Image (cartoon, rainbow, N blue to C red; front, side):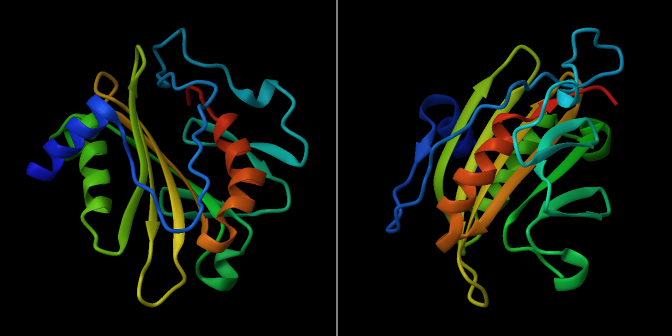
Length: 209
């Protein structure tokens, strides 16, 4: 609980930025819309599919989250988690550079906590692992949601260090959480974040489904 309270204070009052030895691009992107999708919400965001995607990308929708996917990247479904990546997960087992989308509905009834608390506990779980080092975090509110941005360096003993950018939209009213991540090896982060990650997340939106 102390860790969760510390994170709440950190996100709410100041955000948090931690410098790393390597020059990692920590610039943040703001998606086009973080309106929470709801079947009874007449003002929900329209799908970006009505717009022309960035050059070299095509629109993909998973559980109401819409973002542009690099055309040549692979796609994979693992349970309720969608991923798109340079590597083929079925062939290689994992990916090194790519994005994932997870959507959780009815959070209160499933887990007994508000969606925003679920988001904070999700981040706390990441933050508590010794192999992870926080690089940047931010909290902001919209009319319909609380939005958490959390970027960290993951340095496991058995693999190359990776940079992982996590974007979480949580609505206590709709009891909804969307978790979108983009990651790449530390050595290639700047290249793929600037070339693909920023484009994907800055053009992301949410639509009813």
